[in-house]
Amino acid sequence: MKTYQYKPKKTCSAALTFSLEDGKLHDVNFAGGCEGNLKAISKLVEGMQAEQVVELLKGNTCGAKNTSCADQLATAVELALQEG
Image 1 (cartoon, helix red, strand yellow):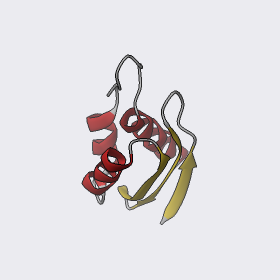
Image 2 (cartoon, rainbow, N blue to C red):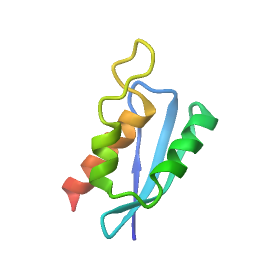
Image 3 (cartoon, rainbow, N blue to C red):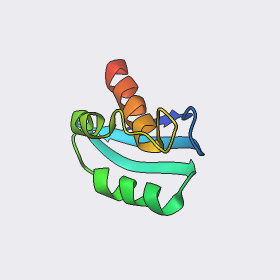
Image 4 (cartoon, rainbow, N blue to C red):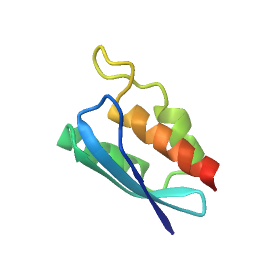
């Protein structure tokens, strides 16, 4: 299992970490942000196929921002998949 760290841009969360194993997402953890919502996102995506998480969350916005913590998670997972 490989663990990744990402610094979200234009969101309330300051950092996020997650692991990938066999194409599945595990142990998503946000530092900062809306704690309850981010804990819920982490639980919902646990064990999901990484590509499915990207498809589901990419483009999600927060208020007037053109991104969100969920969108930043999708971006981070997408980058990790490109890394291999």
